[in-house]
Length: 219
Image (cartoon, rainbow, N blue to C red; front, top):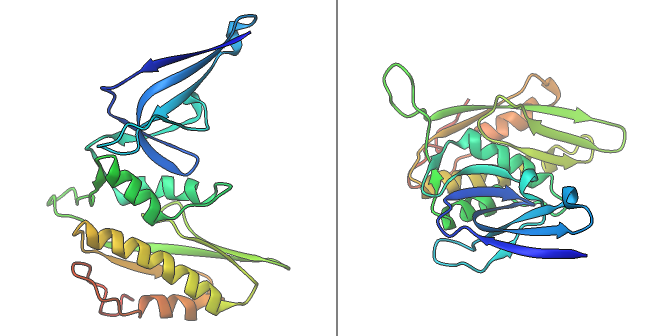
């Protein structure tokens, strides 16, 4: 027979990621089999935000969840990109904008990394894109060295679709940075000459923002 036990963790400050969501863990649900305690399962119980404690249960077991940070801690865009990448690969994909709001709702936000020699914020980022055209479908994604994660799927050769999808993801990041008052430039690069015109269009987009310096060509 299986029994369910709940352990409350009201003082826990850990933000975790699972199934396309970021939330603060406030407890754990244990499912114990009397006949085989080795097969005990545990699932995190999470809050819906700083002011809510609705007790939602994440679908993944505790050992499968990823720690994001502590509530109130700021994380870099590159650290945030790890969870954007996982979110885009979920069965029901989520966007950077959705994850960002979950991060903020849980009491954390973003910060820019700083240069070691003068401690000033790094405000220019190169996004290297790789393009893979196959017979029936194609994919474009940023490399692991990029501070922001991009990924789109399209029909081979459909450059307008590539541009439209990438520019939409770019605007998500720009709106996030603008909300945080983290003015930065995102500059696209690629070694693939077949998509040089797409890279050029992305870098020449004029974007009106309050804080991000994106109105001048970013080549």
